[in-house]
Length: 331
Ligand SMILES: [Zn+2]
Image 1 (cartoon, helix red, strand yellow):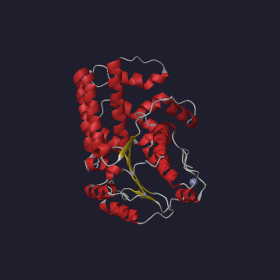
Image 2: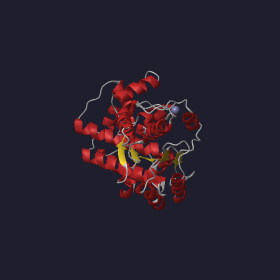
Image 3: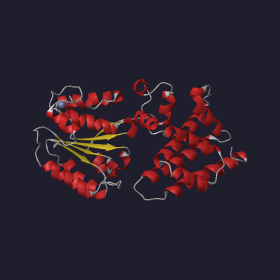
């Protein structure tokens, strides 16, 4: 059975209440960083809406005929629309399938649900095709658009959806949830900070050992390395992780710089290292690194087919020039 993540409770209550008063919007834009779980929320909501047990505020029962079909991945009233394999784009054919799907009536006599994820992956034609359904939705339609970058969706799409946001989470709900899943010995606050408030990424990071990768990147930033070699090394890692780690480090450094936070003890280990790294740089220089890392992150993960090596070299050379310029040498 799907778990409703505890930091989703408010959004869940809001939508279930609307559903119980027959006021649920036919199209929802569920947006937020992947690791806050908007995709998992979409699944939970779809399951709940198709579950045969009485609608209340609980999650789907996990036992009825619908739930069994959903778990097996072949419920006829749930359509998942995503990019074709090896492509980041959702093409017009997939959007046409969605139109055809909504033309048939519900198999089970209830709602027909479609989950489009990642919604920003729709190309122009696909978005235009989806717009037709959003403009004249069938009465039994529930369309869930899951997006990490809602700004990349056409305004015409966004304006026809009710937006439900899943912002980064740093509070006790996330810390409690993580503490039940992870072995002792991890500084959960530090890990949440490292993933910029994305608890699901903390779990993934420990499972696939990208924590080590993050420490490695920190060490690399301190060294004077050949930019081309270093870019090659980083490119052989998960490029998304590398850029998101850089963005996180410079965001953290800018906060340390502006708040003059002191660091003590092992728990502040990363903060202390970042503070050391930021020595000799002023806030505007750190922010310029943050901007460049963010920009190159978007370019590396966007639909443009830009050279990852080039984007990494661009950042490394900028960083090294800055640190040489301010300190005479890189640490
Ligand atoms: Zn059920």
